[in-house]
Amino acid sequence: MSVIVKLLSKFDDSGIRKAKGSFSGLKGAIGAIGIGVGISQITDLLLDSAKAASGDAKSTKLLNTQLVRNAGATKAQIKQSDKFIEKLSLQTGILDDDLRPAYAKFGNVTHNVKDAQKLLTITIDAAAGSGKSQTKIAQAVAKAYDGNTKSLQNMFPELKKSKDVLGDFTTEYEGMAAINADPFMKFNNSMDILKEKLGAVILPLLSDFVDYISKPGGPIDQMSAFLDSFQDPNSDASKMFTNIKDAVKDAFGHVKDFFALFGNGDAMKGFGNVVKTLVMALPALIALKGIMVLASAGKAVAGLVTAMKAIAGANAASSLGGVAGAGAAGISVVMVGVAAIAATQFAAAVATGMADASIKAALAAKGSQATTTTSVFSGSNGQTMSIPNTGDIHDLFGFKAEAAKNAKPNNIINITVTNADPKATVDAIAKYVKLNGALPSVLTTGKYGR
Amino acid sequence: MASDVVFNAKALIKDLEALKPGITKQLKKDIRQVVKPMQTDIKSAIPSVNPFSSGVRKVANTRGRLAWGAGKPANTVTISFKTGRSRKTATTALSALVVSSPATALADVAGKGSGEVRRPVTNAYPYKDGERRHRTTTQGQKMIRHLRSKRASNFVYPAAEKSLSSVQAEVKLVIERYAAKVNRKLN
Image (tube, rainbow over all chains, first blue to last red):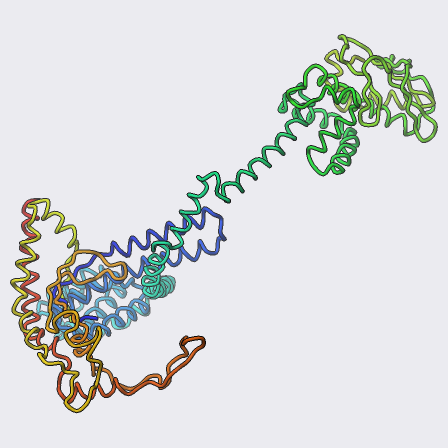
């Protein structure tokens, strides 16, 4: 506790600016870590308010200093002056920062706070009523107060014959500012004044808050320590993130393995193949559904790969040892899959109402071939469909198909449909070709021919 | 107590130092010289005898941190010159006279309030294993009455006000004189 007699004061708002800067940083940090929009909006308002209050405090301080020095204003008069400016600003919609310089000027001229207020009111009213510059009117009014009315009379010729220039001037324009006030500006001013008042409350709180968060061992120190702990591989935080990273890596590895099955060991290529095939052969979604059922049974992407391996059969499984192990055998499996997708369509056609065994002639007429061999599967009405079973055979999607491991260009797959309507089968193939332009590309590039 | 406001005081000192290293020391000396009479006035206005003491009975603690003259002489008045900023307020004292003895400061401001007890019973506060509250004593009121009867309070400002306006003007002149040196150099 001490008694302080101030001799000279200094104005330095860098401390407040720094506090505001810290608060901006906090706002940025809050934004960065994604904490709600609401906080961001609140900090915007608080910062605006603090800024307004800081500017207002500076402007008020300047005015008050001049009033004390030039008009000998007492503490009570200073307080009343602040209220007067606020009231005038609210009534007229003119910013308080624009009123203060004129007020200070009148204080300097009149050496009397009351007269200064009176002259300021006249000036504001005349400016609003005549549309002339407030600054120029203020200069003329100040001169008129000192007895030199020439400027004022030149600006307002109707005063030339007046015996009481200032009195008549006041009477003519009294209350004009309030009448002509722009409601929108009045509203804006009210909001600004409110903000300044809020800011005056916020500034010290802001300062305390910054002190709190920046004190040794405070929240900023704690957050720094937490972030630093990531650099220590033995810390719990670091271990947790390592575990997450490993889990993501594993999952991604399984997904990569899965798609590599379809792309000769290249996951991206495999993904492209699968997407292309799925788009071209919508019925394959039925098969995909089967895969997903199996995958869900495994409850993981790893289960999906296992399921694929299981579907491909024991022999294939041995040749599908992940990305590294995928080679020519991998290609053959993919081909089987694609062929089987096409076969799925045929089978669907067969299973839905065919009666004739041979479709060969009809297919030939359409530019396709169909010959009977093996691997029969049946429809619910006794229909059957055979797909040749020569060489490597893999059971995929529930259908038997010929592997193309050793297939040559223009190799032909012969499909036999028995007890089915050959026309329906041919139509199904023809419709597929019409809709999709061709059979799946892998079929037309020589692995499987028509 | 209105005092003039200096803007960019810190920058001024920085520029002065850049202009002539060590010149700030001279500036402080000049201010001290101007303020010295007022400092002496205040020192002499501070009671030389403990105003809290009473021939009849004790009216306040005479020991501890708030004892008269404890830690530093009761009439310690220092001249302060600070260019540092404040986090809480934009306008702060650049130069001031500080009466820093706690007992002196206490005696100076004591008795300015009504002395009315705001809370006859205190709020609950932790005590041993539980809480307790106690009634507010009348010691403070007695102390104020005693200080008033001896007219022992409110001595710093009356002493300062004798020469405050002239000293303020002189201090400002000193600052302006040094600011002019920087301005001359800049121009």
